[in-house]
Length: 302
Image (cartoon, rainbow, N blue to C red; front, top):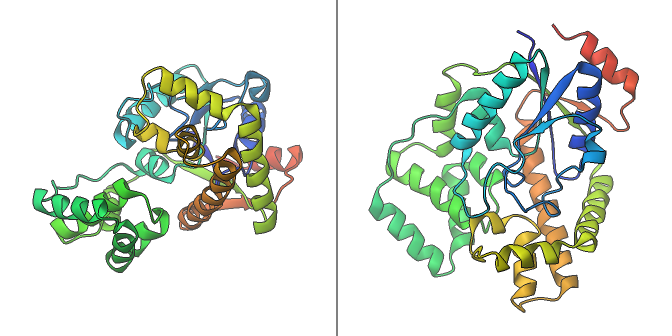
């Protein structure tokens, strides 16, 4: 069977643009691999492509959940499997596109069954998080699961708690559990492509993208989500740009401070994405990529 092509890499690297060009040449449709673009009404801050940018290429797994819904890797895999099957049934090929590494791995390799964590462990960790020790816990995670610590932000309370709970309850790190799931064999065969920017160039692209988000009305988008009844504490609003916009609307920072914080956090996130994808067999292309390069790559596929 023809493999999937997965366009991966850090935020603001131009994944969607490359995916659209590949899809046009290959007779393919795009399946998104982004943990925030699944939410309806979250368009500006997640960088959803417009109809003009998609150039007629169908893009699946956008707007499939309400921002107050619980959405996880398992639900993503279920929807992505269905989309892939539908696309192939119509005789089209599939291009995956996105930077959420956990979702990509779950789709390609599967999710391992992790035993329930001990409630007392979870309670102890949450107490320490409530006491302001989240960064200390991140450092402790680095001792027992360096790979997880590298991809989890130092203040990501939920994911730090989860990774430490698993390690302390089961005696195995979350990374080990994921590896055990991967050892069961691939669910889909995929060729991975990414755009490799120099650090300074990517940082500049991130800053330009963040400024464009705020100029296009990110604050108003978040204001509308809150007016619709979405709680400021909703998991969907922890996404980059959204958390900072909530902070501004609550009077905790100025717009300039919100933008600066979003740029900083986005650059840090890009570093974690690079670390994640460097561990995978990605073919990295230095931009700009010519149409002839894409054509040659596609011609060499089985």
